[in-house]
Length: 129
Image (tube, rainbow, N blue to C red; front, side, top):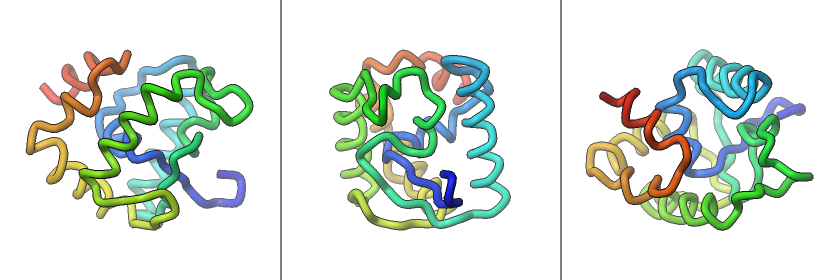
């Protein structure tokens, strides 16, 4: 994110929607809050990626650009990307991505399968409730 561009893994379109100020560390929460504020204020184009993204930049599971939970998050990205009809390299505005995630995943009930096994799932359920 240092050059101003925002890269997002497909499943982070869901994480950002349910973010409630909790996370792996204070540094991670601060970074996630900054990204969300910018997305909501500016509605920038984001670039879809299947690697560590702007959210991952301050995550303790990001080990030299590789997620230590890569098998699990890759599955979530694949499923989410299919439902969003997006592939790595695609660009989409934040609001359109957020709307697509809502209509294609959340209201259809597909979030539960996509997020199965995520350590943060209970927070999403609490936030949605």
